[in-house]
Image (cartoon, rainbow, N blue to C red; front, side, top):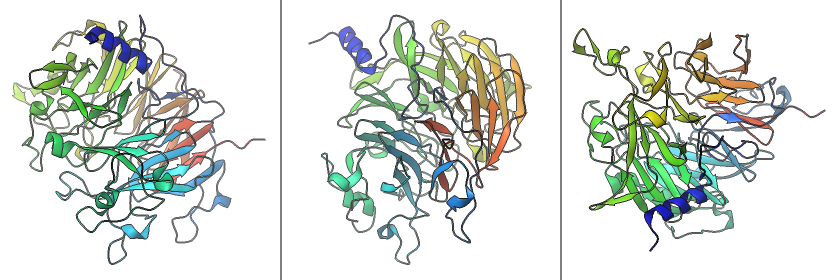
Length: 525
């Protein structure tokens, strides 16, 4: 039997992340197969010749269809549901994105009165022309909106590797899907698609435009977790292991935590869905509200660590290799950092009650590793509105167990944020929920400039081709130059709110609005 150290080394080499010192992120050009483009989750792309001028076009009459004759530099545009929060991913000629079922692609998923049924949906399109290929149409949880809020759809970005798609659904489950859907047959050990698609009703037989489920892991049934309103995580893959936020949270009372001992981060075998380990941090006992951050990973002093934003306002680092302890296999905590300063916790000797605008927040944004430092913002459920935030740079080599000694700098002139950052050329770009875009010096935290877009920012920025793209609730995309000098950005209206983040792949910029997915490309002359 191999020793644990050898197994760990093999896992690191399999993940492509074994090195003596932290290496810079690999160039992110070509496909964009996961949230953030790579495991460090830095929202930066090496794509070139991306557009900074386009027209989203006008609808045809009273329909939701966009007239292509009225667009400019739009390669194709497709209709999504009525709400779309997930980010598109692009891999092997296919584009996948989460949405709901309010623009049904298949009438068999309609209600008896022919209205669309409320479901979580992942749609798959052809990268070249936007042709619809297949969809996952996931029923709502019978427990209702306390666990699965109405019409939110599937909010997680899928992860694609080879011919497999991994996604967290609205039902608090991890699904492994065939990238080709049912068109090439029902593959894998899971054969109950008809029962799955039918939900609590009669089975719905799958067709060639339905998803092919390879395996399923139900986190509510298996772990007892209680998601608050929505399950959301963009899965992290290291070698043959998946790392997933369980979305455990409070119930409808906003006081009680039904499953305080359930894990917050788990490890699954990517081939079988078998659980390999769960975190040992006990985050569930300290939750403020819910948990919706996605894990990231990188090297610290040559050793791989997983970074995770907790629903208790702490940033955690875990060893990726599970360790047997009694009856459990644990993902061991390496260190944790309290992202909320003391003045956000008490005032005049009294505790500030969550979710007070001047109080503590969770870490919902994905932590980003850049040049050996970790960057993360605090924020809350957008339903809680605006409030104080904080953005922190942490040195993981100086962070011990239960300490704040690793703080390099923090920036308090930011509001609550659920946005993952873009860091390029030692400049940090981050949006906050109040609609401000901040440009900071990555090494010192010095403010270079702040620009108010005057509308809530839900998504994240994308830095690519010397530009920074970011959208807001008003439906505008702002395009800044990658510069520490403040300049007036370009503003382009998308005609509908933008709650997701722009991504780039193979020379094309992808933007999902609430209702449509755009593939935008500068016309070749």
